[in-house]
Image (cartoon, rainbow, N blue to C red; front, top):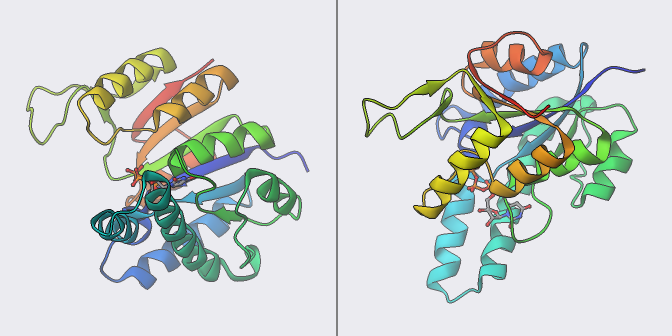
Length: 229
Ligand code: UTP
C-alpha cells in the first residue's frame, strides 16, 4: 500500500483533558480509525498534567534533569497506553520505546501509538524523528492553541494569528520563545529536524476533532500550516 504516512503529535493535556477523559479518548480513537482508512497514522502522545506532577515532585526530591526527563517519559507512555487501549485491535498495547522499535512495529499496518524515547527533548521532537525514520512528509501537532501567534493572544490583544508560516519563520518564533523561557509552540529540536528533512508541520487545536481530522487527512483546516519545502 502506498498511502501517505502522517505523524500526529498530541499534547498530553489534549489527550487527557482532566474531565470525561474516557469519553474524549473514545471519540479521538473513532476519528483516528476513520481517517486511517485514508492515510497511515502514527500518534506520539505527550505527558500533560501527569508528566508535570511527576517532574515537579521529582524536582522537590532532588532529581537530576535526566531523572525528571525519565519521569516525564514514563507519563507520556502511560498516556499512550490509554489511547492504545481505546484503539483496540487497530493498535498494539506494547508501546515502542525507541524510534527503531516504532519503525519495526509500524510495518504491521496498525495505528502506531507511542510516547517519549529518551531524555533531552519532548514528544514533538519524537514525532519529527518518527516522520524522518518512516518517510513521513507531515507532522500534525494537536495542541491547546488554535494556531501559531506572534505573541501570547491571551496577554497581547495585538498578537497576529498566522494561517501560514515558512519553517524559517517558525524557527525564529520558537527561538525567541525559548529565550524568554516560555513553553515553545513546537520543540526547537523538532523544528530543526523538520527543516532539514523538509517535513511540513500543521498546528491545529487538538480538542477540535473535526479540524484535527481534516489536518490529518491533508484537507484545508483551521490552524497554521508550516511549509518546510
Ligand atoms: P511532553 O512531550 O509532554 O513535553 O513530555 P511538554 O513540553 O510538557 O509538552 P508540550 O509540547 O508542552 O505539550 C513531557 C516531558 O517528558 C520528557 C521531558 O521532560 C518533557 O518535558 N521527555 C518526553 C523526554 O525527556 N524525552 C522524550 O522523548 C519525551
